[in-house]
View 1 (spheres, rainbow, N blue to C red):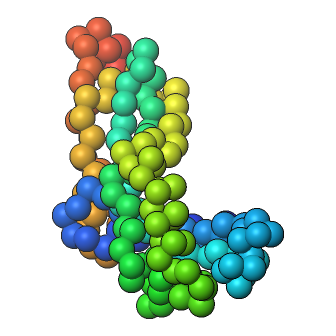
View 2 (spheres, rainbow, N blue to C red):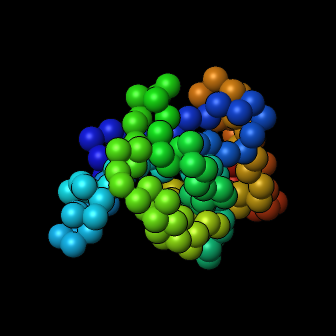
Length: 158
């Protein structure tokens, strides 16, 4: 990871995904240093990620999944200067080879689960459906539908 911390922007109104930005540093081997003219390859990784809640044995698991990875030339070569994230690929020799290698490494990450966090305190709620929607101003709204059995409702009323 580079000097900038990872962050998520929820900028698309009505979208169920946020954009996760990572400042990546890839260490270069000694033979490659001479060819590239650098000790490391620094680039910006922009991924669309979504939050899904799954149930496993009545324990909800909050899961972050990668839905899309931005591997465009503009993002990989120049980064996102408007966010203060600058890529170092623009200064390297053999840019096309570097881009090919980065894209080859990233293709396996598409549609993978980045994080799975079980949360037992919500285990008895039977979360049937949760919809997350961005308001376009950095906030994610959640609509949670709960399903409770009759015994649970009777206990709560007493």
